[in-house]
Image 1 (cartoon, each protein chain N blue to C red):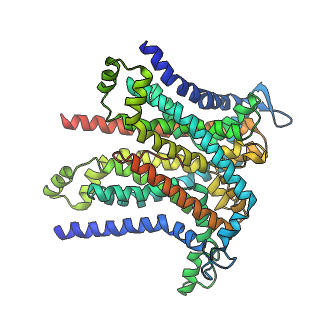
Image 2 (cartoon, rainbow over the protein chains, first blue to last red; image 1 turned 135 degrees about the horizontal axis):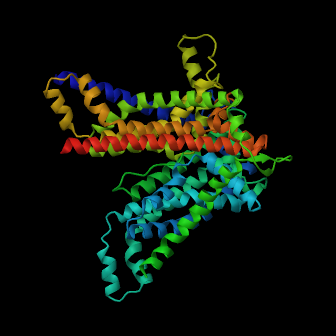
Image 3 (tube, rainbow over the protein chains, first blue to last red; image 1 turned 90 degrees about the horizontal axis):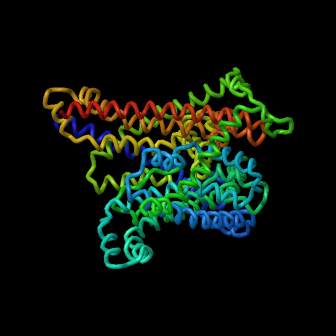
Length: 267
Length: 285
């Protein structure tokens, strides 16, 4: 009996290991090939950082990265403020089911549906498309993610210290700045990192709501244009950098909210 | 005072989501009942034509295709993901967290880049073909890229982590007691799994499956990049109607149908979860 349980467990562990191979092999192959000498993107011919150097001279990629950084920074600033207020409001009194559903809607709705509905909406109100419309579109789902992450910090929050602060004569603002904020700060920073990553990586909604201007070509849009027609060596290098940066940001965000397992992700 | 404070805090967020999500979605629903304008705009004349057109064999085939591809993806994710989630659920908390982070990590990286990684793996010169040729198993490279196989691999790669997370949260809730009781009463490991573990983790299976299915059906990037644009799925159909054919009312109708199917699946899942928890409640009395 014991022996059987052990065998099953061993099989399960082997299976799990294979799942990890499936999840990480493509990423590792991509990273390895980014250091490949020859122009061929898939056949190993020797170590080189040549593609990283070429990247620095690629104006299209650089300007797309610049656009994405700008869009992600502004969208993050807006969503962190509104999302944190929302989280505070919701945690004060148990919100209605309808409110909860409304707030989780942006995380559930398929990207393509959100993309076309925003495009239709902007066209109806005759909003010119550009970086600003992408920012607006991104905040629409980022607020929900910020709100969810910040709310996890309130779970262990002893509300009586807020009352104590007010009883001792502190104003609402002082109480927020000196009591509430320090407690929720790690959550707010984690939410900002998450929001920034989501915006920087978001492709479908940006693609539909960016319009024709070159100042609104985001980094994922540029990548899409490059990989649509096949495998190219310079994409391997860009991809490696992006993977490393996002893994680092997530590692940081994870450390900040360590007590709780992370929330769901938007693909 | 309490009310106004609450409005100041939650007002902006709720107004924001209503303005940028609820109203645009209602707009799509509204547009789906209008006629297409001559120059690609919308003529505000009521019609059911867009929904009738969705039933046309040409488009019905797209629905069927998408359901098949998404269905196979969901099934593979479930069959591969269940043992993986089960294995993680048996670990001690420290290893559990590390293993879960490893499952989640790919989700946080750029979806396009993860899809591109499979273009590198699957192409004729790619690693898989080279290994197979090197091992002498095949003479000429297999056509792994630009077909349904590649789409299903790509979707499974992208969405199986969600399945594992959903299954894990369900499996980790059930303690060892029930399984031990079942074993003590003489049930085999397989019977215990079939009669105890599987029914109790049905909510996780339902949640994970709905998630993977819905995400797969609405995807247009993977069919475009890994399917080579040959196979049209619902996401591609909506994309084409909006950006190429410029028939927004028809595209809106397709999107409305997708959302409707999604809501039906979510409701079905909620019913499964409710029934489960009600049964648990009765069992506990």
